[in-house]
Image (cartoon, rainbow, N blue to C red; front, side, top):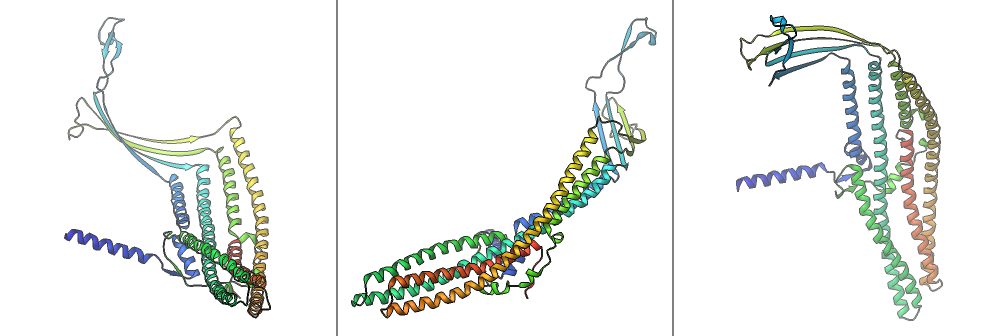
Length: 449
């Protein structure tokens, strides 16, 4: 019983500790910071950097002294018989004697030290390891930019769903009140049944939209949790709101940013590819150079008819060897030349890709700036449209209940208002997302002005 109670307490402490690691409320910036540390894709990108560092050392170690040792034991279960002329032992010419050389059992222990003195491919390998590490770091930067953008979009989608639900609920309250009043007017013989039905049609549509958005809100929260690196069912409270974030993300400074593709991560990645192709050309050329290496080894051998190698009186015979090896490539039937030419062609392709990437980035920056500027202008336009739609709906509602306006006109004004409401929310989200896209392309956050 005591053991069970201890395990139960330990489990509760673990659950409490685990839940404390899960954030319960986040601002947008807090969400971004959390995702950069806990997003699973970002974590793996960090692991790639660590793997690249290990690979760099692995390549470096190839040119450092290498020491190996071996122990061999042999037991000739049936020794091989050799035939030699018997006359060596006083026998008759033409006859052969059966002899066995060596002992039945033997053991040798050797240690060898190898050292490269010159190898062109090794020097290229060292440079390649550095470039590979740089590629991994740039890939991590690219991943973090994409994670940041994904979190901003997911966070905005949640806020959009929350705001839409609040607006739909307010509209439903107004419509239910209108239906109640219109029903009373109709029951008193001062209106038509069609007026009630028109409002009921509008109410039914709004309720359907509300149900749909509530489902989308659940999915939006789940998507945000995935981008944050949290359990998909984790419960979050977002402390920012859509309107505040929109105002914070309106910055004309981003439109004045210089269109410099060389500072973007996509350009740096393309430049890494070009460098790696240059190193492949060097590698192929280095294969025509001689390689020089040296080695020294030493060891002991023991022989006996029985296994007595662990005894003190077992005789051991030492030996040692030093050597230098020079490998000179002479003729490969054009294989090395073909490999070098192929590497040069791939380098030319990488150079063309780099130019193409530079031009594409310039276009992406210009397009992102245009989209961002349009989003700001569209947001201002949608705010004005909503104000107009609210006034139109209020006038038509007044005219309808005063008996000088039709239910069709009221329904039309209400539909126009609801459309304007959703368009404004979408315009807010577009401002936030378009700025995030521009910042991702520029590879830098834009300060508000």
